[in-house]
Length: 141
Image 1 (cartoon, helix red, strand yellow):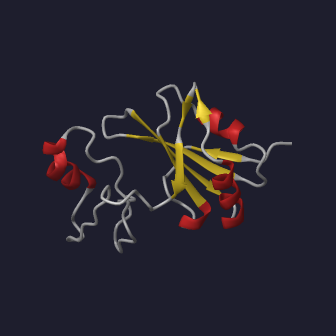
Image 2 (cartoon, one colour):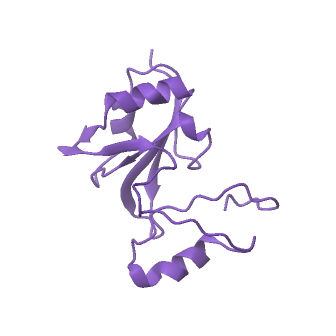
């Protein structure tokens, strides 16, 4: 019997040590590809394909596991190959040096503000925005 898999939903719901970030996935990737690849691992998991501002798949996914030990086993499996393309895998929250920035600003700052600030760098310049706890915000931003 396969473990229960929760698909879609919000991006980061578990502690970072229980989640992995997969990049470089081909355009035809479906959640089922990732379900099948990580099927040998025990326990429930959350799978979320990542879409850009224009609702286009950006070749990334976040997978959350029941605990850090299972996430470590997923990392040890290496990245999946889907439609002949080998992806890359890393723990959540860590991008290669030079590819992430941290912004501190007022509570009113929104995703739209960030996209507008960096739009001159190209449509896909901002791949992901992750907010820390923001008291008083209920929209997930």
